[in-house]
Length: 166
Image (cartoon, rainbow, N blue to C red):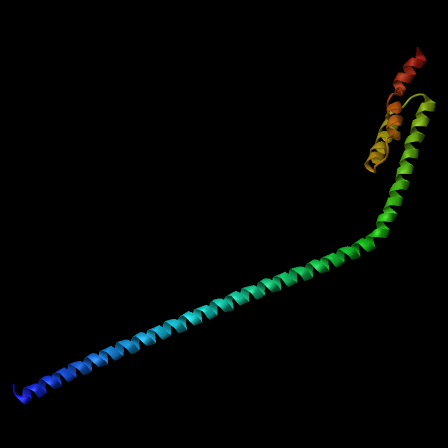
């Protein structure tokens, strides 16, 4: 073969080889760039996830601190209210005791007045039962229950007058 053809073949092979090398280098560089971009994107995504997680953790911690602070403040206010209410509750207890005593006395007075008369009328019946309802609502004891039973067994005015007339 002629040296010109061989030169041509070598030149052609060199050209093909150059093209293959350029293609290979381009593929390698492209692959490395894509790999670096994927790694960078993965790192960025992880950084964003970490930042989001950190933000969520901080929010949760802030919420917990706020809940704790609010609970402490509420507890303090409750304690203050209890301190302020204590004398009022004590006074109400004394008022309740006095009211019970007054109701008991009124019930007994009404009962003994009717016992003395020998009968009960409608007004006495309504009055003593209203007093008894208030007495039991305030926590009165069962002593008055016996008095109420004896009162209810008293004759009405009509029954009393009828027996008197017989």
